[in-house]
Amino acid sequence: MLEILTGLGGLAVVITGALLVKVGEIDPGILPLLAILAMSAFLPVSEIAQIGRQLADTLGSTRRYYGLENEPVIITDGTNSEVGKNDFDIIIQDVNFSYPGQNRHALEEITVSIPSGGTLALVGTSGAGKTTLAQILMRFWDPDTGNVKLKGLI
Image (cartoon, rainbow, N blue to C red):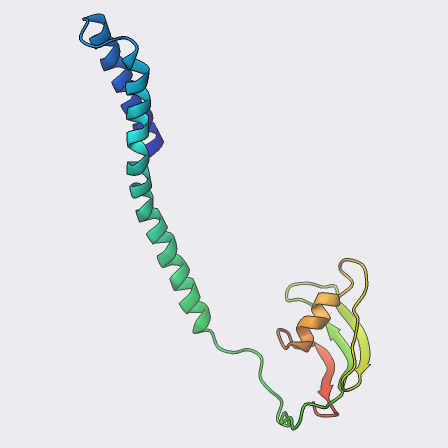
């Protein structure tokens, strides 16, 4: 809408300028300068008009943020989840996982043992489940079946 008004404003300046050139009020060489000046004058106005849209976007984003912040926590810790010092083995045992609404398993019967201080490299083709396994290790998701244990604790 604002672009239409900017174009109409520039057109009005050109038409008015052409009439003034015709009656000899202004020099014909000034007409292009006036047209460019008129179009340039509308740019700050259009930026000011965008503030309302940006504010509405910000308010919408803020509402979504607070809505997400107030969501109940779905993932809960196990009953025996106390961890002492940081030298523990990570044991992934018979883990199956499917994303919500998907019939296909993203992970199927995965069993891995990572010794304390060890390193695991996840290598595979796209869609093989590398990211899904990493997300399960970070508790972004819980497995459908199977366990992720720390030194034998579920």
